[in-house]
Image (cartoon, rainbow, N blue to C red; front, side, top):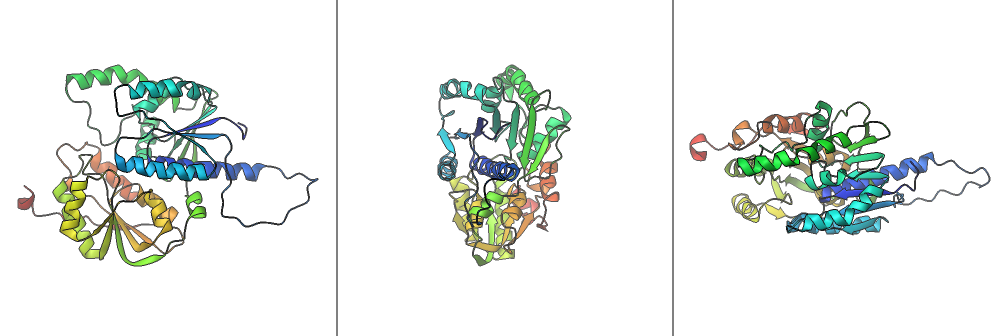
Length: 382
């Protein structure tokens, strides 16, 4: 594929857009290193610059969710992408019954024409619908956090693509929708399987083993490290929030108790909220712990790299326990991960929840591991 190949990226979250920028940087560096020097041109003096090389021909389509925090971060990330020389299109695909159909009509022709398609969320039903018309010879899946681990495992085992925390459709209407949609999901799975002229690449910070024929490229956050920081370090500890309560995996009372105990044990002063955490939950956390609640306007990897940041960052099992060690390499910041006790899980949690979260913790590199903290007495949580 030529350097000028038409490349279309589809992203639905700020982290996906960040990882598209990381992939574009890695691709541009690789192309720059492969470009032969012309013998007739004398060598030029080396000029030091912090601006990363730009990948030509990249167009990014942002398919925003409806929640305001995600949309705000996506707008900030879109501005950064434009600053890097990429073309960014904002395309509404939610927020009304006709929005998905308008988006499909607007993007269908471009998806068919793309020579290379970069996907941020292979589980997205909207993206899977677009994959039914794709003709690209190369598909690239960039990290959507820990979901990438589940995606690679399902593709390797030939299973249907289902998010790890989903428990299946409820009721007859839901089961009918799943049945009608099944052929689309099955075709998407085939698209992500290399065959013939079709090539598949996974660009990830996660500890994954890709299926035979799939290329794995490690995302070491080189763009983030070249563009930001290093950060100024502060005394104390920063806590990183999670949306495990909002997704129905962890009981709210258990989560609150764990955050309170972590803040006390580690001298934490700030709590970086996940963009999906509810205002009511954050208000309760602040009142119970005295923590300063910070709602980042960019993905945490960029916030931490810009600083200021605590010398220790404590997180529950999540994407950042894999990405922050890359983004903060050489800064002296310690990343710690607190295990999820099985007793914290809700009755509606997926059967896969405990093993999946344990796997996220066990496979993290260059982190300090903490035992589960703050479970209240059984009588108090009944």
